[in-house]
Amino acid sequence: MLRHLGFVSILAGVLTACAVTDMPQGGRTGGTLETFAHRVATSEVVLLWNCLQPEPGQLRVEGVAQNPWQAQPIQYLEFELVGVDAQERQTAQVAEAARDLQIRTNQTAPFQLTLKTAGTEVRFDLYYNYRFNDNVDLGAARGLLVAGPPMVSPRLLAQTQRFLVRDVCSPTQHLAR
Image 1 (tube, rainbow, N blue to C red):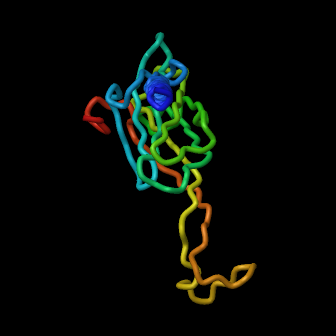
Image 2 (tube, helix red, strand yellow; image 1 turned 180 degrees about the horizontal axis):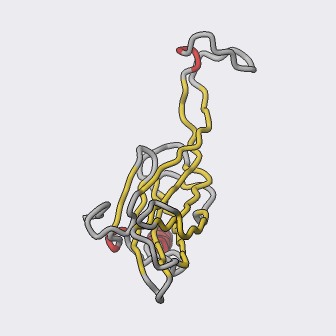
Image 3 (tube, rainbow, N blue to C red; image 1 turned 135 degrees about the vertical axis):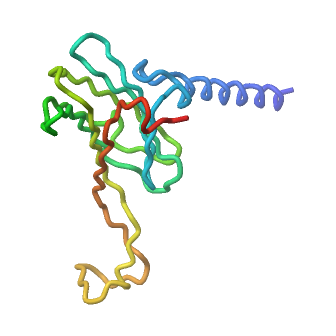
């Protein structure tokens, strides 16, 4: 009887944890990953987002960043949303960081960018960058001297990756479906 009661309490705890995990994060994104219209991916991170116009002269990009398969965490994910006019000039800009400093395997982190537009934009571009510890085999590089004790195994090297998503709110590009 006591063993059965322990099993039921553990099961209830696991189900409660799953219910809390599936809830929208802070009400900022919209819930599940299937609710996003746009998607891009690199070999380390997947971005999903929606473009909203909460009021005239404003554009809001709300989404989540996901680390679906990398064992190393994605660190310091930052975004920059830029409005571009017909002459390829920048008209407006906003920058934000993801809520979480690290995104571990199978985790998501919400992000939100609210841009005050000038009204002359023909497209909006999203720049994003993050730091990722990549395995680098320093023994394969000829003539490369690294301070520290000699090592046979690969070392982790932090690299900042920067990417561009052109026309982030396009109705025909970067579609999640």
